[in-house]
Image 1 (cartoon, helix red, strand yellow):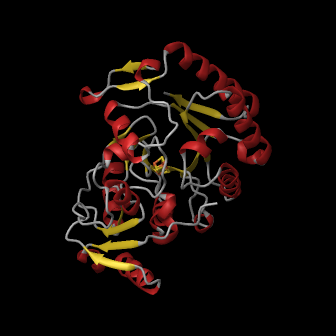
Image 2 (cartoon, rainbow, N blue to C red; image 1 turned 135 degrees about the horizontal axis):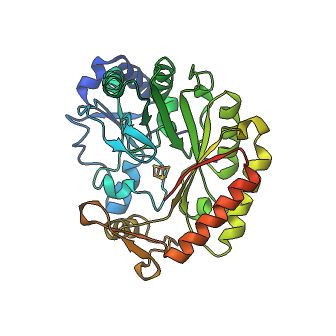
Length: 342
Ligand code: SF4
């Protein structure tokens, strides 16, 4: 069981203290005797403690930087939503395959932004531009937002904000089970609460520092009982010895442990494991003992944006994986909806 995240070291941008959330966090960490330092910008935290890269990386992952989100222009977020809404960057989890390792490069510390109302105002403008179309916002493109929300309640604020809009929808995904404070949020059915699920093997070997499968299932049950639309992201789908049985057990357990009403309209997003050459280097540096299979010879190359292609499973394995998981979903969740496989 992982305890809810509590940073070992906190940095503040001085301007963050002009915001109520900045003040609240400052008092919270001071009361807990956590070391507080200052930084001129959340983009430039230097001199993190640690004697080598390996230590510095681990210390960074337990460091929280409280700052302001300056860029209020949102990235697109296909295929799950129209836009990525940026409440936080970085994550305390240690998933070996996590793409944040490459996208965050030398800044693996966790950042939370206290100018939440300005971020929501920007979301409002995006919704207006697209009206009368619905606009979906994805809150977990650059972090596992639930993992830090027991400290900030930013997500709760956003859930209630979108609950009050007619054209906005919020969605996010998590591997953490500290959801209790979100259960009474007035979501009005406009937030899809997704959990990242995987075969026990993948969680055990590649997802340290996150909630275990039974904890995620239990949290999913609570969220469904609170009336949230529920979803599961099965990612990364990874072929290990006995994967068919491993994934079958996953769907069996999900189906047995979730009440029937939780299964109605549940969505599934399926993402096969992939890696890029730069990611492979970073993974091997940060997690040198990993069992994660990263052999280009066993994969198929798919051209990507900016000339950086990714290695995915060969066509035959991809088809088998897709057919097998689709069959399990149809068997165990006949009222579920598969949104995409990629
Ligand atoms: Fe990355 Fe998600 Fe794991 Fe955090 S929980 S390390 S964001 S994959």
